[in-house]
Image 1 (cartoon, rainbow, N blue to C red):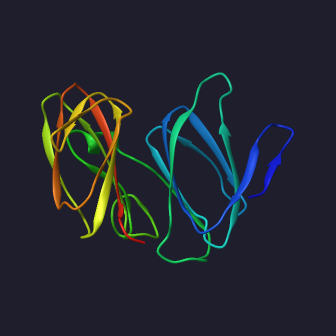
Image 2: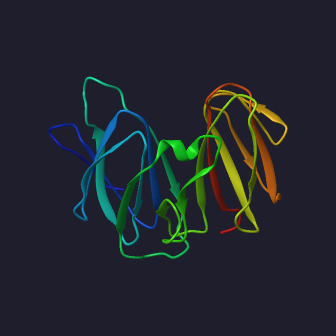
Length: 193
């Protein structure tokens, strides 16, 4: 990994053969990369960068007077050394109300950004006492659940804000919101690479 410090304190670094998904939770994150993208991602956006044969990028807080919080998830691609690519979408917040809104998919024709792996991401925001089931999209996949806000019962296990839990060897599991506006991120990935 090559790290360069620039006068404006932007950390620039290189990735290859990695699917990188960024999900802002608060604030504005500025992104710049070697394939020509200069963008700002905000809460409600989802960004993917397929590093493939290699891409250099930097990201930093667009607004120095406000905090920025975001999740960045790295997943190995199905195929190595592909051409680097970038995509970003803005989500419709109401689509995740009492629902699992798909935000990442391996199918370019599906909802969300396209990932080069048999992986699906979903966001949900639920009313208190609302229950919903999630069905695994591909046999052999598992799910990592991350509680963004509030309290839930996931597959019979009580989880609180910032808790995480992995589920595998299952076809389906249930989620029940214990608090109002509980938010959860589900990351479904292959269990064998």
